[in-house]
Length: 159
Image (cartoon, rainbow, N blue to C red):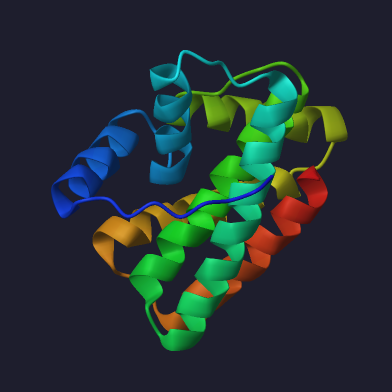
């Protein structure tokens, strides 16, 4: 998938971030959906899978870079985003669209049961701790590093 950067006014960035939070998505994901709707187009399932995979890889790499820079809060959110997008990608491959935070938990639990692998839930729980850290800023660098290891294991198990 080709990517293009778009520079948005700060006011629009804030609105996009707020709407993304309300809809339990990441800003890039919501922006793409809104752009498609605005153009009167729909993402077909293959495009949706590709979008999720591309954004997940970008967020994962961005998160690791931010961790190296010592920005634990932003690293946490990017790594959570990578996780959420990976889960959404796996769901999209199965013809499902997860739009709420709770639906991701239910889907991860279902995968864990089918695979007979409780580590999937454990690793998702670590990723969710990163999401919470974005708001609370309570994790130490070591804690974030451990959670990153779990995120990487989860992504590997899911893909």
